[in-house]
Length: 71
Image 1: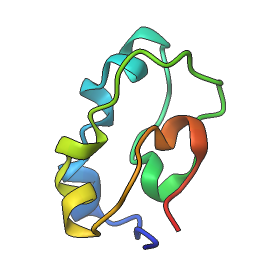
Image 2 (image 1 turned 120 degrees about the vertical axis):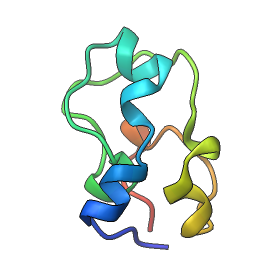
Image 3 (image 1 turned 180 degrees about the horizontal axis):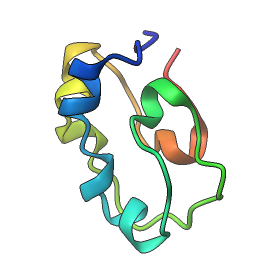
Image 4 (image 1 turned 90 degrees about the horizontal axis):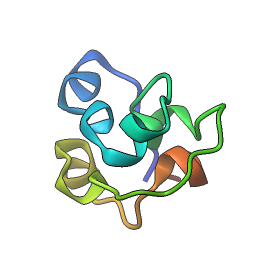
C-alpha cells in the first residue's frame, strides 16, 4: 500500500532510531513513503515492523531505506 508523506506519518516514523539509519549516517526518513536512501546503506537491523506507519498501512517487508517506497 502506498504511504502518503504527511506530518502525522512523519511524527510516527521510527527511521531515525533504526540501527541501519544511524550506523550509515543516512539522511531523510519515512522511507516507506519517500523511497530509498540516496546513500546505499549497509544493512544492520530494521525497526520497520515496530513502526506505527508500518502497522497503519499494513505494510510487509522492511528495509525501505534500501529497497524503496512501499507500493
